[in-house]
Length: 162
Length: 153
Image (cartoon, rainbow over all chains, first blue to last red; front, top):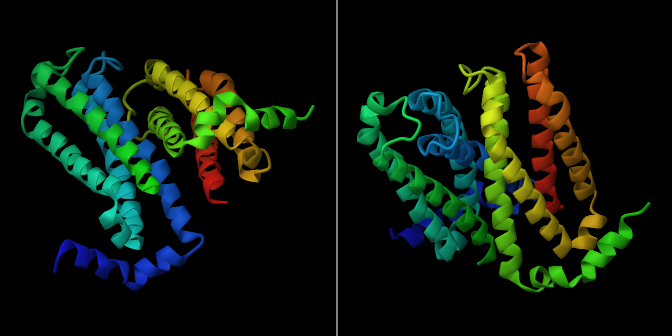
């Protein structure tokens, strides 16, 4: 089964049809998805800005990151759940949408970025935990993260325009 | 005093013509509005949830609020400017839209609350500051929910 066939199959499931054809459910899920931006991207940005030494520089990096991460995960769950339902309802349409494709690509990179960060630079966080500005590689991750999440928001909005 | 003439002016104003006539002009401003939402919503959540003992709970809320204030203010300004452009592009639709009217009322309350009661309540952790955090979260969530409704209704 090709990716297109998989999308077409998803598109025709009962759940997808129900979400697509409802006057209330679809906009409600969209609302969750839009407002969830604050919880996901907003909290990610705050940790990034701490790494760059722009805010909360007197607080330990591990404290800020550790306390905020659970919020980010809640945001991720809300975004992933609502996003999956929105995709399901318009699976075939999404398959052909260039903005959607680009967004998925960006999401994969945005997922790999913290994965690499946590298994490399962040392992030595105790060495620079109290530094006002994190080491160069950590700052690079922060810049990349801010750029990627901004691009994901922009691409996400663009989906509606194709 | 009615605001109708202002909205009628906006509906024909040259400054908003680019937004009215081009699909991507409007889209670009919407994107800015969403990016600013991430920053504004992020700071509100981290400050208020911190007061409630969720997230940044080990730091003094007053300090977190002070540290995040530049982001709050910057994103608030970006929201207002991009929001004003969006309204300018759809002035008459907004003027008669109940969700838009409610959003403006809630927004005014949220800003007013933030710079008055919330600001002083944050200083000393207490039941009072927790109530202020809940009220702030409710007001901003209301602005967001009603804002989404403008597009749907």
